[in-house]
Image (cartoon, rainbow, N blue to C red; front, side, top):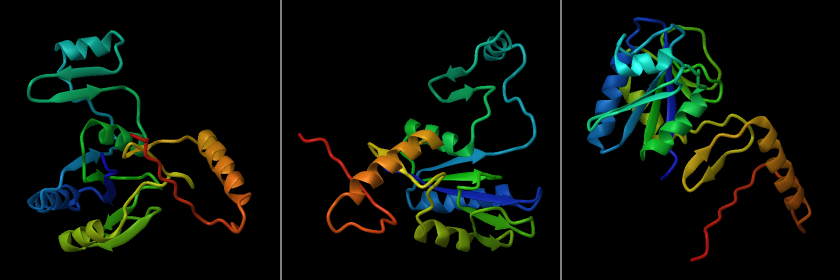
Length: 198
């Protein structure tokens, strides 16, 4: 699986974020692109139905609870996941071309701001409520990856979320090895690719 693009879209309530996202999804699907959405909210919510089996499972302490049917799968957990971890989980479930995060606050997520809400870190553009073409241009032209630290690790086409400690170990080890090579100075970036011999 390849790494999906990730784009956050944020704005004040009732500025048309969901409407824009729905229109963007429709346009992307006309190009046969597979789209997922993560909805971020600061409000508490419960999508389960009281007294149903999964609701009861969670109320007595099961966490997470996964509901599977022939038509859909629903994962519920009381754990709050950062956006980058939610992206990593979605990327492992199914092949995706792009993940849109409505209400993104994560500083590493590339974002588009709608309207005059205070600007968040990693904002690529500010648009008005009906400017779908700018969003589509950014999706087509930009890399749109989450970079939570100096290192991006992709294994078998999937992004691997690294905490600060393993990221620093890998970075310092690889930089140390590369620095020792003849002719290598002032390393600003590096890229490794490995394929298992057949």
